[in-house]
Length: 52
Image (cartoon, rainbow, N blue to C red; front, side, top):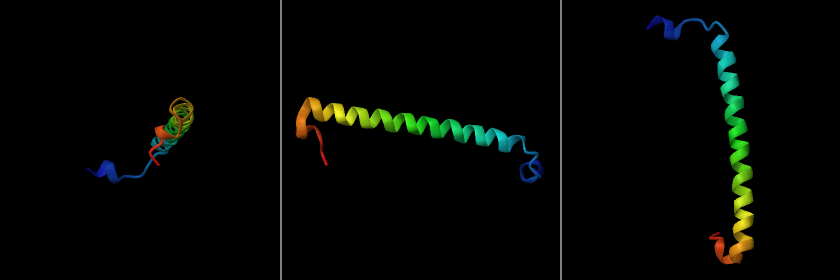
């Protein structure tokens, strides 16, 4: 239990930073895909494809 609250050795900080970078990349990829699909649906379906 004490290990969970102990001093950080820095190794986990590097792993966390790498994980955050990986997640930011994934978010960027998903945003690009969403935007592409939204514009494609407007082209195919016209304005009725948009609900907002």
